[in-house]
Length: 234
Image (cartoon, rainbow, N blue to C red):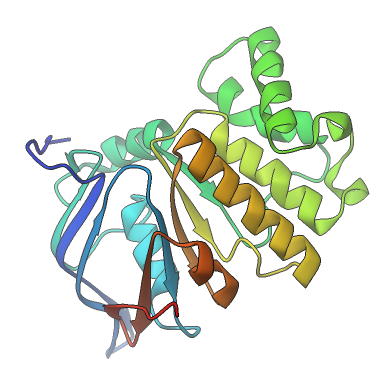
């Protein structure tokens, strides 16, 4: 992957565009997106369904490729990266948090958290030590032996956040992290994300419908019809 030097930004995109094809129809998901994120920011993107929020997160995470524009993430040119390089980039740099948690139902909380460590080659013993520490960090040290079916939605999301943190990523991409939660659980998750950001300096890029997240954002944006604008959080 070609490195890009000289930028202070963790994430920097210029003229980013994404077009999908449905048969002969072209669907423009993103149009000329310019985004700059510094280390330690808590960036929040709002917008209606279909506005391009998830598409932008997928591009920043190296899950998908842009149709046009430039994209430098953690000093790496993702547009020029090979598929194998993108896989390494995702593993080494990014934690993902999703709306529906994506936990394996047959595994307990601790085993779900340590899967990325085992996949990277860490020993079982060392993985468990780090996994327990991550669960304690999100307030679930006492629930490590419980399976997802024995946990509330908010607790499952905390497990997913611990899993995202376990490889010490450069930043975390969160796609509707409160979207499947009641208001009390959503507020608890927001408080946890803010605490991780402020106490540990973890960078978050969050796509959401939840306007409460605008109140805690260091920078906020609105995506409408693929266009990214600064949002009014007041």
